[in-house]
Image (cartoon, rainbow, N blue to C red):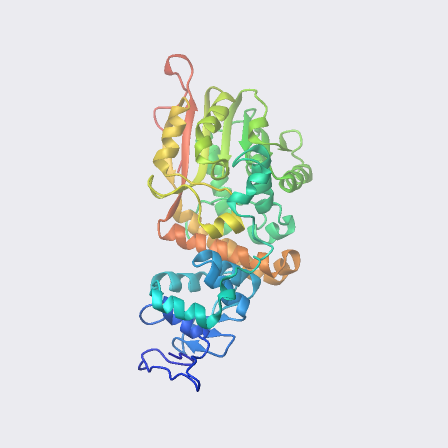
Length: 447
């Protein structure tokens, strides 16, 4: 049937074949109807002039080209939609591209998808042409599929990890300054109140980590996966700690070291471009791992926590801060959009798996805290920054990459709010002989 400009609730009227008995080419609206059920919560328009859904909908989707339709048809789900959106072949109306949260919420809550029947599917393909099922080249922001990444080594080899980290973090330091704000901190903040500013919440996070580690002047801190050196600089500046950070991103290391020198912290703080496996093997008083565990691969948890434990002195503390699944049954690998556009090779486990691996590496877990709601607030803050600096961000990294970040951060915010993913801090010690760990009877830090 023809669905051009058919309103929601209108009677279904069989289309009449044109002269000669041939049916008209299916419209974008026909395709939408074939894969959805019930009333549409959004207005969808096509490059062919067709439209479906309520004319007064707050959220609109416009399929702007045949390529956009091919993206949607050849990679159903979030990957096809991401390709069309990042390339500009799919436009979202009613939201800002720096924060499409409301559009994602409406689509997730109210759009009901269904697989078309075999007869519907064949009719659509015949009408559209089989060439429509040939996948167009993906946007340049997309990483290679997992099976092609083997050219950079096996998953979580040193070279492949370095490539994956570079894909995500070496976008542009100037871009990150605009989105993350002055703290240059790309991890979950801690909010005392929803009214806290992003900067206040990031400082509170660093103070919480410092408190859990029991930082005191003169201590040696190793911060693995240190990003732009936020924890390293905070520990040196606020607690007089001698801090070393390591990161696989060369751009991060260069920015962090320049910030250390600019702030006059060179005698206490240092950031090196290093794999965590190559960090100095001396025994540190404390170790922080803030946002690195997501990148190392679940199968590497045992070796990872053994490596960190081996760099702790007896009685030393480890604070691991990372995103997790909400339970231990969910698959470890991320979805297609996250894997191709955001965190290639990223993996998450449930909090139970994480804690078990820390214990099995010979460390003793003393405290665990879930900061899931805090990450939703953090992501909302980053989206506000992206919206406020949209034109500058687009000038720095291009429209496509800026769209990736708006989509990723808004979608992640929704996932944290819905308890689909969580953020856990786990505090552990390396015990000395006979179980001595120096940990107090009650925590010596304030949550």
